[in-house]
Image 1: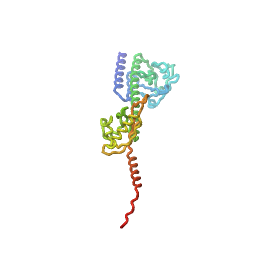
Image 2 (image 1 turned 90 degrees about the horizontal axis):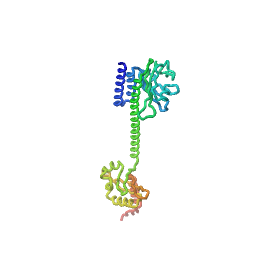
Image 3 (image 1 turned 45 degrees about the vertical axis):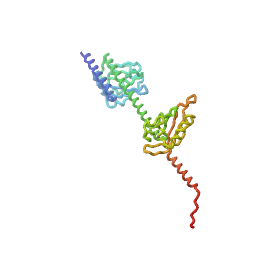
Image 4 (image 1 turned 60 degrees about the horizontal axis):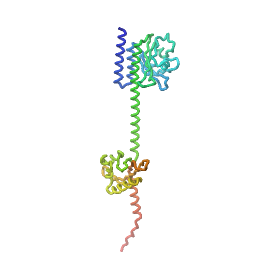
Length: 326
């Protein structure tokens, strides 16, 4: 009956922990509960999860139950020769110590002794495809005790569940970190694009526009259907459309760079000057693959040049003779 009660209790704990592992996004709570529940299953009041550090030999007591306040989150132990952790890593098997008084393979750690540990069992915690363990899950006892095959089987299954949880959270952490880096990269790109006065655009080998900077749409108020292909030329001042079309056709025919100043209509009706440039990307045979271009608002510069030209013309006019009274 005792064996049946033990098995029933262990199955209940596995079910409860398995459900928690599936629904909770709080890793700290899951690990704390893992330590608490295993105490219920094996009827002991001491348990801990020891996280293996990046160096592969240092373990941190990351979570635990029943320990004095100076242990969890603070104690680190080295998996050096003569330690239970080294024995675990070397054998890759559960390590069982039934009585500190008769243990000859290794000595217990000082923090275990201070907490009255006299027996323990541990299992390595792996992810499903991991070669390196996440750490060690350990159940300690303040009195000598045997650990049955049922206890060991239970802990193996329990550690597999725990490994799956840690694997999931590690994967989520990597995904979140990647997403954060991507968002930061996109933010930097967006800021850089906004600070860049040049609006990039591209056209196919036949000269049809296939992409253009978002600022074009915000500036003109046009949509893609009114822009792509050759529709974008309708945004030019009527007096500039012929020179724009002729210059673009000449570049398409000769594959020479395109460079022209035109006035482009803003959504509010203004017609500032823009410099439109494009270069052709050639394939190995010297044929046009695609055109890459930029738009640059040069209205201030053009207006300055026009004002300077007007002043120059004005300054060059001959002085009129003074009018004489008859």
